[in-house]
Length: 415
Ligand code: ATP
Image (cartoon, rainbow, N blue to C red; front, side):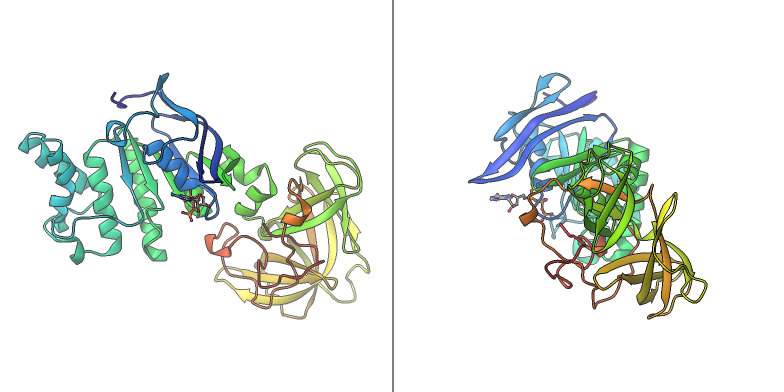
């Protein structure tokens, strides 16, 4: 069966178990032709398993895969017509760029003229014509990855599967290659499923993202959906909500309503991102760039924290200040226990008192959703500073001070 020219590729309840470990379960996803889908999540969440199930490299334990209504998951990988690009480029070291790109075409016993023209076109697409006669060892990592991509696109796959293709490259090359992959996708319209743990990469490349955690889908949506309306605090954490706090709801609220929260002797107002009941433990999150710096401290500053109409105002103290080029990444401390990260163009000085505002619309309160015992407590102000990454910085790691500041009993949480 050829998969060329399909309309929709559908995964229904796809799952895979390895021994007693369930690596993936219940993945329902319908991929439209030409779509760029990113599978995103932390290490071990089941991204590669999902991709390998799609490729046919790993048989399904549960579920099925359908192509335009025809069952597809029992086909061997070579009959699916998919291209694969992996993290390690897997090039033949003794073949030139042209030889590597032509290899699959030769295996298919295509006419020589067609092999030549398809290889030439693929090499042109990845902008390596001037390197076509070099061996892989004479190329940079980024160039080698481009050869791997050219080798795949020369085969004119119906779907391109990419598993962390940029993770062996340095930061600058990653950015360049990201743009190239985006351009290539726009030019060729190739349906692509792309595995990454880097949320910035996923957000910038994909039409839709599938966020996985512990083998389960957390949310499927466009970059805007996930960025604006994360479905769970795990997704929020991945989408740059670096400040996550475990608090208690002091009133009832439905999704989208204002909810009052308390914890550590503080009171906050937030927007409910689910149904919340009075007395329920919630995880509330706010992005560093959404925290407002209202004023420095001093005699004119309000004497106590206040809950204004649109925001909660809190008395804080700057603790670590890092210049990041255009602005400052600041860790402030509220009271003795709570550390909060913010970004501001204002030059704050470590030790300086400061009033901060937490906008109600930007502070989201999620049902906790997991057994309390399974959430490791962290959150004492981190000795290591604020980190300089953007709010969706892949390097920012899984949350506030994960590990380093671990201390039972404080209010910030980390997955
Ligand atoms: P990473 O980003 O680290 O590659 P991932 O999200 O791609 O992680 P998977 O490789 O899909 O994660 O693995 C999901 C889980 O299944 C992990 O706990 C992993 O150890 C396990 N797993 C994957 N492949 C196998 C295998 N062949 N045998 C046993 N366990 C496996």
